[in-house]
Structures are given as C-alpha cells and as structure tokens.
Length: 114
Image 1 (cartoon, rainbow, N blue to C red):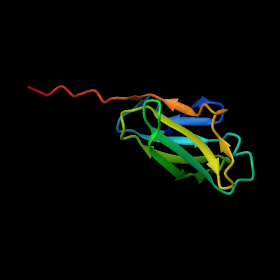
Image 2 (tube, helix red, strand yellow):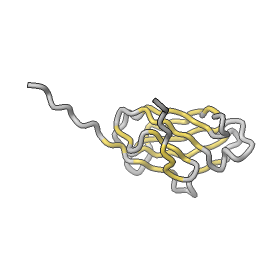
Image 3 (cartoon, rainbow, N blue to C red):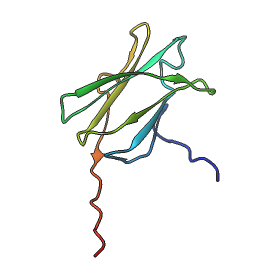
C-alpha cells in the first residue's frame, strides 16, 4: 500500500494528520522561507494554549531528501496547537507575526460494549 502524503495546508507547510486530534503524532514538514536559505538547522517552535502559548517546544527538524525539514510532535494537550520556525542564525518564519494555529479536537469516548 503506498504511503499517504502529508496535506499541504499552506504554501510550503505540510501536516499529517489533519484535522489534529488529541493523542495524535503530527508530522510537520516545512519547505518555507528558511528551507530556501542556506540554513544548517531549522527548528519547530511550538506551544499549546488558548491565545497564550503554554508548554513551549523548540524541536530540531531533520533535513529531507527534497530540501525540506520535518519533525513529529506528540499532541498531548487539548488546547490549540501554535507553531512557527527558526534557523540556527535566529531567522524566523512566523507567518508575518501571526504564527500558525490549529485546533486540537478531543478524542471521542468509546461506547462500552454491553
């Protein structure tokens, strides 16, 4: 069975899966402004929260064969998932100051078998 490709949600940013559900491992692939530069390292800067960011993550991304960068994040918070990117020279891609935000959906409770 062929592997499913991540969905391009915005030019140069791919997420899998979309929508995001509490408990998911979300693969983020980045092919934005910093990927086009001579950056040696790119990081995902992320957090969870409603408005303000909590539980801040700064994760190194791995270079992909097609010139992008990727990382996987465990979504263990039910608050919104916010993120942006920076390189090792502290150049940022933050969506013109707006960052990127995705709602995290709660897991449906399973109906017990009777």
